[in-house]
Image (cartoon, rainbow, N blue to C red; front, top):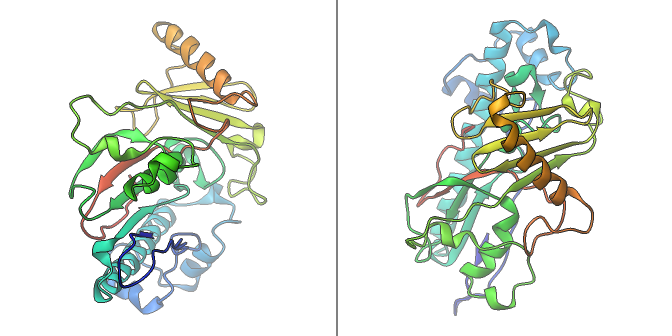
Length: 304
C-alpha cells in the first residue's frame, strides 16, 4: 500500500504479507470451517492429512483426499479475502481509503494435483506462475476493468511511482502498467515474461518428482506461447491462451519448429548474465505472469 500526501498526515508505504493460503490449509479460526462450503476436515485422519501435507507421500492420495485438500485451500483463500476486506473497512473508517493505492497480488501459485504435482517452488507450470493482481487507486485507475494481456509483477514498483506522479525520477526498472487501463487506442504491449527456478524446496513436496529436481528451469511467456526449458534439457511448449491446463505439449510438433527456434533464442538472450531481457529490466528476473484487474473493493482471490 502507498498513500498519497495529504494535509492531515504524511505519506507511507506498507507491505502486508498474508500467509493464510499456505499449508497446512487450515484457517486460523477453526470455528469458521463449519461456516464454509466444500469437503471439510472431520476426523483425526483428515486433520493429519492437512497438517502433514508438505512432507506427505502423495502417491497414495485418493480422490476424496484431493477433494479435501482443494476445498481446504479454497477456504483459506476465502478467509484471506475476508481479512483483506477488513483492511479496506479499516482504511475507510480512518478516512484514508480514497487517498491510498492498494495492490493485492501473490508471490506464487500452488499445485493441487495439476501435472501430478503439489505445493510450490517445484516447477514453472502455469499453476505456480499465474497469480492474482488487483489494483485500487481512486481517481487514477478505472473500476471493474480486467486486462486480458498477461503482465509482469516486475513492473509493480514502476507502476506505483507513476501513480504517485514520481515516474520522472523513478529508480525502478520496468514500465508502469497504467498504460494497460489508460484507454489508449493502441493495445497494451506485452513483453516476453521470463521466469526461473534454480533449486528445489529444501524438502521437496513431491518426494523427488518435482521437475526442478532435474536441474534449474527457465520459462518464457511470449506471443501467446508458454515455453519451458527443463534442467535436463527437455523442452515443452503450450498454447498460453487456449490450453490453460497445459495438457498438450506441442514442443515436438513439426509445425511449431519455427516457434520453438524463436522462443529458444529469446530465452537464451534473456537468461545470459549481464544482458537485460528488455530495456530497463534486470537480467534473470522472475516475472510471475498475472491477469490484471482493477477493483473498487476486495474480491475472492481464487486460483485463476
